[in-house]
Length: 154
Image (cartoon, rainbow, N blue to C red; front, side, top):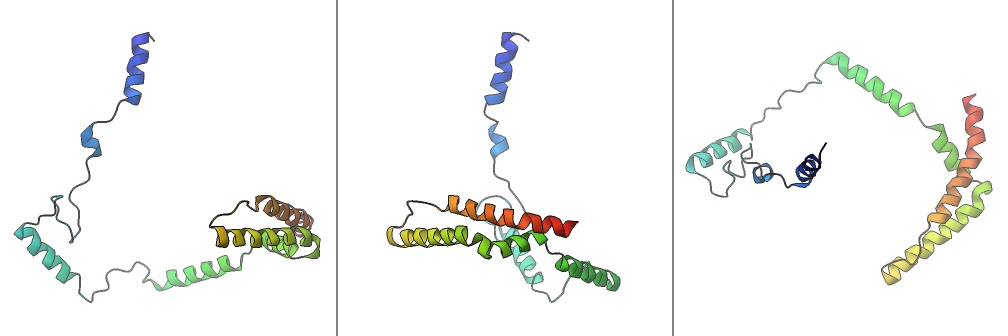
């Protein structure tokens, strides 16, 4: 590869694309704007748009793909199965966050949230965030929940 090939490849990489590739799309199926891409609407387009708008007001419901009886029952059963699944990690961590084991980090986090919320209400911005307190709380909850989770999984 020569130096000219290098510069040619670099030019192709950083050169601007052609203007026709950036032109806005024209046409479409909107009844509000004409297909020509301008705000002007020909009389023929206006007539077609009025007919389309009138035909859209019909009481027809259209095709519904789920009208089969057996498929509906299976879908309901699948939804019920999905609702029953609960991640035990989330529930264990929530219990640990509210337990006396993580009372200290939770207390510090709650105080920080109140302090920051007060600063935002008074000054419009906060001079601190509660990231450190949040991570202490999450670490405590995870450390508390991990043995319980592994005991459940065995």
